[in-house]
Image (cartoon, rainbow, N blue to C red; front, side, top):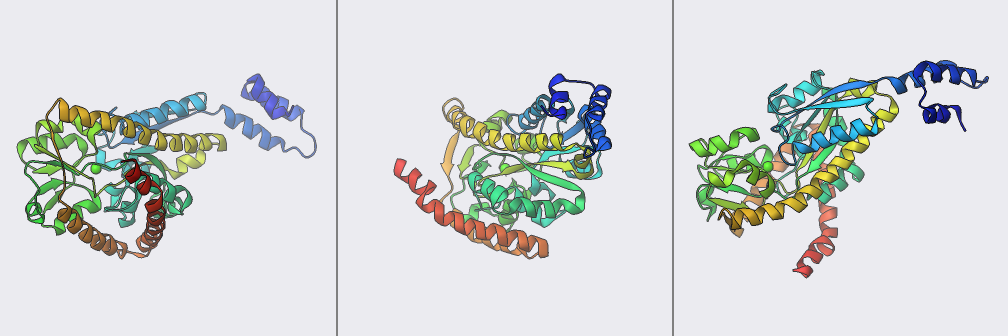
Length: 371
Ligand code: CA
């Protein structure tokens, strides 16, 4: 048995471990390195994780809590993560700054909220008429997306990791019927990111509001419509109480990926094994959230319809066609913001074309066949 393994299996303390490692060293052995490694294995870290969601909000808020539990357990308490809801340590839309400056070591949010910092960030949540959850995860993990994302966040001292996916969202809650493109004119709607820009070109007024302010804004008439996530989350906010019509599909967010943001110097201070734990836990949560939404969204939709009498309806095809034309315009224009955004867009666009062709004969063909 190797000495290091023996040390671990015996659960020896730092001093005893270092002594044993020193005693076992031969000429090739780096005593100082071994002592350092043993000391690091005993060192513990306490991290703060700030989020853009109400504390423990279903799905979005419980994902970082699960992440924290997982990291705590896998590291045997050497890395403990304390999760803060929106406004507890910093406001919902200051998560990025807090992590960038090191006020918190980690954040959980959506990249598209940071379009004012860097336009390229918008490609890392969801793009109108863009990738589904499955496709997004493919692009990030195997299609070059992760490397580009790290490049986009590098000037901010932030390391990003996928942090969950809601799947295809709903089109949103409206206080009037949308029967034609003209009905979007003058519509004041809470819709962030590129979807908001598309609405603007269709004649509407997009508003960005954190989740916690949506219900009241809709209730007081400050906004006429809102998108949020999907049945599971929209039910939790009680949006059916303040809007009449629930439209689908969420053309603007076909597979919204959340993000974990990590302060880079804080990450680099962790020993390698704790870094690996953070990476693996983030990846597990990314899949876990999608699985949860897949299961709970349809149950919540049944409840909205049957218990609360919600009017669920599809956007008319000509409205979707118009939104698609405008979306392509907006996304192409955003891609010209700077060289890096262009590079991200090219990668994203190529991946979408390839995966779309494949999914026509796989996912899409199968779902059509099953129906
Ligand atoms: Ca949304």
